[in-house]
Image 1 (cartoon, helix red, strand yellow):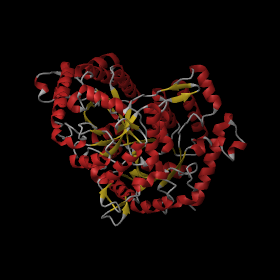
Image 2 (cartoon, chains in turn purple, brown):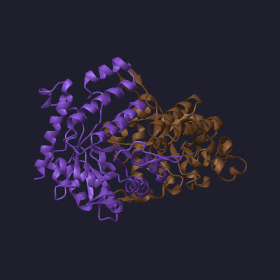
Image 3 (cartoon, chains in turn orange, yellow):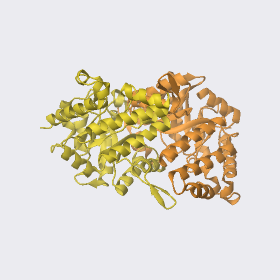
Image 4 (cartoon, one colour):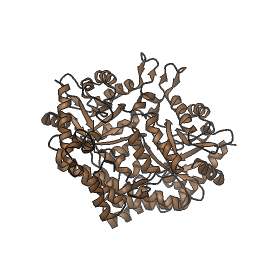
Length: 310
Length: 310
């Protein structure tokens, strides 16, 4: 799968991913109003508005980008109808030829991780029939439980040509609380570097071209740490959240890429999907034209990031 | 919420929780056959069989136990119909007066954890209406992202009288890979002890009687570590997985309880729900009577655990 992602990035000249993290406060008011007029103030109405919002953004951007990253929490908060909207978003993105990275951050003991891997990347067998439950192409994985919590995902990557991104150094302010702790008998290295070592090790079992199907998540907000783990995991694609709304700047991003200008993909969620609410787009686009604002924001993001790679 | 759980444990004289982790290989064959004959080899059939299986086990055990712990991964692997069966299981357990611990192991950056906390423990607002999406009573939480990934859950606990269990030292074989790493400048303490310190700190903001709504997960398979963190978090209820099928023994469990015999709740999943497939129950119960076997296994588990607390 990672080779497909790399090809699409090269084809679009766009190492970017759009985070489809719909929050009712970003969703254009007319969409929610329409859904509520049809379905009342219900989870179903929220789900309908989310799906309409997502589809418009996908329609306006799919030719510019290689991949999207729906954050499942934003759908889970609307219960079953929300999860249905998540699945419909995944399917719609596939129709448009996009690679879908399910930002699910799952991880558990072995047998349970196996079920999560099946849910999101694999096939479940019922009698003689095999069914793909959610069918994302890639997923994010939490490493806190160690190898036996991650290996079932790697096995599924190998079996079904899928990919994962393991959390190494997350973008949030308190990520250092545990991730930056210095480990004894390791030469004073922080925990996230030990996780990066494991990502390299896990990834050796799932190479797909120059990169591995086992990638890593490292926040744009921590460029120095990004530079260090880039060297520790030369074959891992780094998924970089935290650009834009969370404070990461394009000038910080070079560290996450290999010298060939590949090996990383930068996510923006609010910066793209809520562009119509923010400067400079809000001057030119109103809530009815949110998707056009998103297209402009994607173009600007691609230009901004490519400028740092020259 | 934790005070309600403690009351129920005292009332039932049973510091145990039944893990509702249905796997098609545990589900009695006649249930799946019936569902497939009605709905074909579909996710809907699997979900129907799971729900029928769960309901029978709940009916057979609810008067003996304070709480259940459905593992959402086992439902997620059956896609949308699986998630619907999860929600119906939560609701059915509530009808029977059980406390429901959603074993969801969610955790993300602040704004995303807020969405997860809303999904599982809180209320989402759509227009003027507030709706509880999944409405478990408690949930498990992954601490890898630090305070700002956990705090939204604590806030929701305070707002809606709910509880969480934060992963401290998990039951799986490779849990030590990161969790046992010794931290510099901490007096050579392992990472999981630093997490335990934080659980105590987070928990101070959500006390509810003698215990805090912020509890911890520590595996029965690691009794020495359980003894250490028991002292570090005197007000945290410890949810103890790994008893039975994963190898944890009752004699190991004393360490997880406070001197008053309270402060821990022990989970068994396969040992209860698949009892009819295992000695000694398989001699007396066949697949048609799986729920009776579960009731016997619950009685035996309660006796076994209480024997270690004398």
